[in-house]
Length: 326
Image (cartoon, rainbow, N blue to C red; front, top):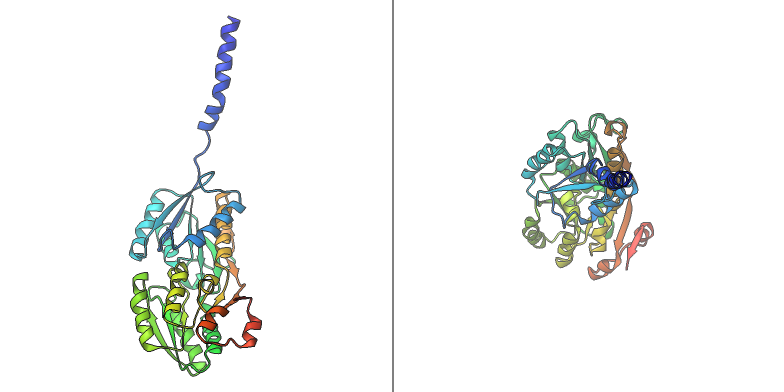
C-alpha cells in the first residue's frame, strides 16, 4: 500500500509544472494600426521594440503585437482600428501615423492608446492637455510642423539665388493647411515664390517629381508626414535622380542621399513610445502619463550630395551641423 501511495504522490508532483503553466495568464496583446506597410515602418518598429524591451517586454516572449497594415489606403484605418478593439487588445500603439491615432480614438474610449505625432496633439483633439492628457490617450510629441519654416530658411541659405522653392505636402494630413501657412510665411520673409505639390500616396511620387523637374525650382522642402517618414529613402532617391536640393525632417533622409535634414530623432521617439506602452501594460493609466515633448533637434548635411549638386555649403551652416556626411 505504501508503494502505491508513493507512486501516486510522485505522479501528482510531476503534474504540478504542467498545471502551473496552464494557469498562467494569457500574453498581453498590443494593437498596431498603421497607414503604411511593414517594410515602410521598419525603422520605427525597431525603436518601438527597444522601448518595450527596456520595460521588460519582448515580442513573442511575454507580449504579442497584432499588426494592421492599411498599405496607404487610409480609408481602411477606421475598420482596422475597430477590428483591434473587437479583439480586446490591451493597448493600441500608433507610431507617427496621426490618422491611425485618430481612427483608434474614434474606435474606443476605454482601451489605452499611445501615439507619436509631429503635430500638436491638443490642437488635434487627441488629449485635453500635455501635462494632464485625460481620457485614454497619451504619447510623444515631436517638433515637426513647427520647424517647417526653419527648414525653408536653411534651404534658402544653401541656394540663396533661387527665387522659387517647392514644397511637397500630403493633403490628407490633418496639419497640411498649417504646414502650408508656415511655409508661405517663411517664403514671404525671403521674397520667395512657394509652389505646393501634393502626394497622397507613394504612387504619386513619380508624376509629382516629373512636374518638379519641369518647374525646376531652386529647392524642395518635404513636409512632415508619417508616409513621407516611412519612405525617406525613396524620397531621397527621387531628389538625387532629379538633381533637387531638398530638406526633410529626419536623418534617414540625409543618410540616404538627400541634401539635408532638420528635426528630431524618430528612432528615439519610437523607443519612448515603446517605453510608455510597456508602462501601460504594467498598469499605469494614460491619463496620468504626461505627453512627452521631444524638443531635441539635429541638423544633418550630406556634403557628398552637395558636391554632386554643385552647391557650396556656407561655413557658418557647416559649423552649426550636428553631423556632416562626407
